[in-house]
View 1 (tube, rainbow, N blue to C red):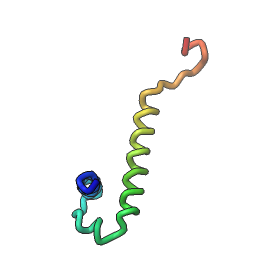
View 2 (view 1 turned 135 degrees about the vertical axis):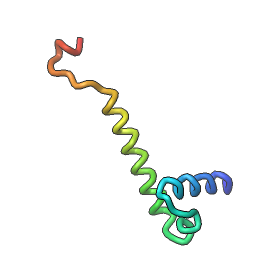
View 3 (view 1 turned 90 degrees about the horizontal axis):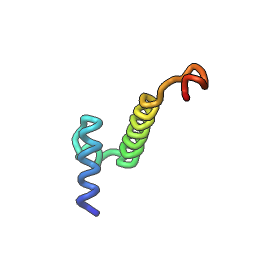
Length: 61
């Protein structure tokens, strides 16, 4: 469990370009929440980029 937490803190610190000590001194849950939101946004943008816009139903089939 502790090893997983250390990996998460290191990943979040790298993402926000801050030191892991700053995360531990600050609000860890805030950083975790912001990181999760950004990852969800990245996943949604990759999903929308893969879908193609279709002008009519005839173009789709």
